[in-house]
Image (cartoon, rainbow, N blue to C red; front, top):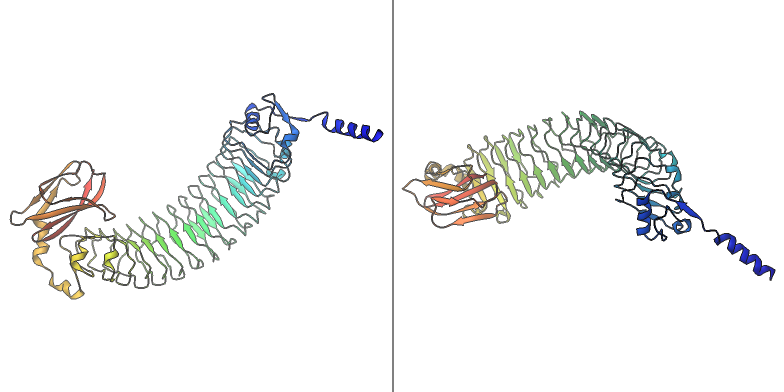
Length: 481
């Protein structure tokens, strides 16, 4: 009997006085009610025992201003409290097992991270921080703090940091010296003036475009696969020690030379609206995509060592010749608006797979060598004075009559808003016409009534008008407003 009484007393002492945790924020309490954690209504408290065993808590977008009560979740490993109204948070209250903390899009301006040395994943973006000290977070693996006016970031001792995101900040410099395991850096649209990655041999991706960068140090980065550095102030770029580079993207850059001789794995080269004066891809056998429109590339372009090349966008340059004869996988070629271009070899044996070839506004281009001149008319757009021929020798025997076609037909207005008028010499007859977009897709075709064409339904953009006549074919650029 005494033993039964003792057991009863023990159970009464343990469960007779249920413990509650105070929770002053009604929005936080309502979130717990919605999750089934608080089951006795809005009363400023919840049963502490209900928080035991919960490892993940998601209270995103609940208009919470105060997380008091979080201390009851002693088993919590992941806390998601993004897009709330938090102006402060006491991290001394969070459990020692917490490894993921998401406070994205709140109103925080200060945070003491010394209480969470165990944290692995930390999201503090879109707050009001100006300075963050993460120097004691040796376990930190993912850290995102974008979209705020932060000017100071201390990452000392963050030796396990794998991914750092600091987009749209006021940071002018980031010391990554001790972040030896960093693989992904996203820091575009900030105020970085220099970037030193000499201590980051594991880096795989760098996104740092739209910064006032004047220097980037890549002395030993064998694992770097992606580099995005457009809209910076770099006047040179040394990629010698980045042999693993696969994807290089930039735009609006100032450097005139680019040495790719040690980048044999390069597949994508995108650098429009820049100042390159030459291009050598002879050491890049994996190259698939080139987009170097609007540069100053001159000389003769030879892509014989790029058998995998699919896209070559090289319009608005000044080179004189281009040889694509060893590129059987070509689908898109744009070399228009090249005033010095005189000769192009497109005889690769697979012109039927070509989606579009554009060489409009090339006044010096007399001929393009293709597989089949007749079949090529369906997907190749050239000036009236440019002839498609089957071999190089034919370039010397161009038809004078075909070259004169340009003076026999005209279109107006161009740009056009609604109705396009075609004016032709009375001695030549139009047989049919077609309009294509920049992808080579036919948008419109006509077999009669050629004098006026209603284009009011066309979207604004650039098109190509191909006019078939009894004297030859004319291709003209057409702009729709």
